[in-house]
Every structure is written in C-alpha cells, then in structure tokens.
Image (tube, rainbow, N blue to C red; front, side, top):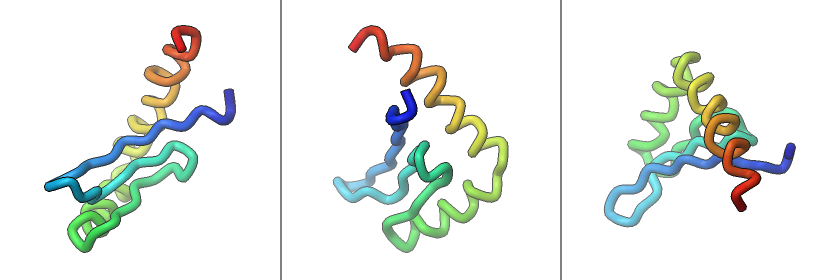
Length: 66
C-alpha cells in the first residue's frame, strides 16, 4: 500500500499550473502563476494535512474496488 499515490492537478487552457503529489507532500508549480500559488498553499499547514488525508480517504478506500 505504500506505492499508492494521490495526485491533484489544476489545469487552465490544457496547461498544468500546479500539482499536489502525496509522495512529495507539497504543492509544486509548473508556471509562474502556479509557483506563486504553490508557495501560498504550502505555507498553509491545514491545506497540506487535508491533501495528505485525501490519500487515505480516497485512494486507500477504493483499493479493493480496483
């Protein structure tokens, strides 16, 4: 179960702006705007904790289905 990975990406006009990866444990920006937003969201510890919890509630919950 350790190889399960939760990824949440935000796209605009088919361009990935920002991504949360549960293996990295923080947001990563891929554009100038995405980098700025990642810095803001990474400072919010409750947002990081919420995204990490998504791995447990969404991915691990559905492991038996797939």
